[in-house]
Length: 432
Image (cartoon, rainbow, N blue to C red; front, side, top):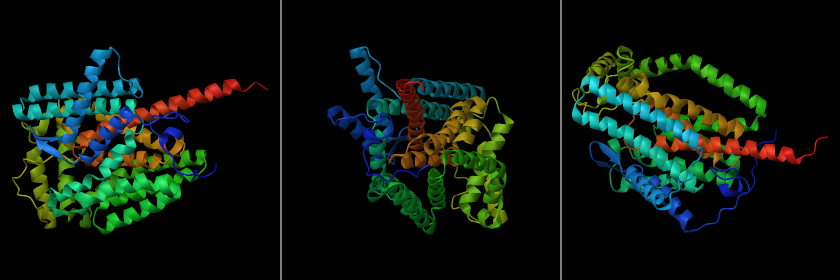
């Protein structure tokens, strides 16, 4: 098999980009410009939130506007909007409804505080809204992914208005937006080789500036992209073998990450390790009912504080927070947080979401033909899978989850379209 093509860049409407049939010509018009502008705005406003029963991302107000406009359009025209892979979108919507009902049952059983009930249920509702909003955008205009990423790449402008968390201008300001721009621009101008070089350099910069997770992600994505140079069958074997090895080694990796002397002396690792352990113990103690939204009537938070205190004392480390400061604590794992709060059914969406992200990685490396947006897709699938395991389920991350889910649906649609096209071409070839 030949290596990925390094041909001159083109928009996805002339390649196999998101939602576009190969060879289709999509002209710019007012409608296209509108949806691309909405996507750009969602990326640009991604870090911004307002305080309203917790932190409400400004981008979700944009999503609500899109949903309201779509509802009005349906009433006026009696037509449904086009969305990518309706069955996939309906499946994940149903999974999220089941998760929401599980949260409601858990909160009523645990008699959670009313404010925490509202925060928990609103969070689940907005995840469903984000999923539907992105489905409408991708169904209306195939170029929204590139424009959303471009807007996100400029979201670092926020640091000129609001100082970043802990005053870390790279990790919480410039680092990730600039990386997104690199992943978006490098394939367009430099093809696959240019992307590999850019990712290796970006990983080194992140590591030098103490953004370890982003540095590791850049190197992992570069390694995965390099697999596209292997023959298809060998590529499949490497991916399957690598995944199996990762699953076998994951307990040891996690143990080393949070228990080695150098790691446990790191306040961030002490904090994360305590969160994961407390959430897991909360789930094990009530796997069906869960502990309720934000653990307001359970001992999960108290257990977290205790584990964190013991870890800090054992390693003579300073956490950086008051021992009783737990108001803003959010478990750093979307999957474990949902399992602990809503039980196994409360994690229905996230279980299937994790499997879908793994399939998206497989599709990007094995199924999808090369296009300049393949690295962006792979970047999103890898980063959001990491978020599923190690980032909180709160704030702007809900928009990321909705985007990734719909992107999986786009990949499913492209796979189906490719099969139909192949069958059509085979029918045109006379039998020998």
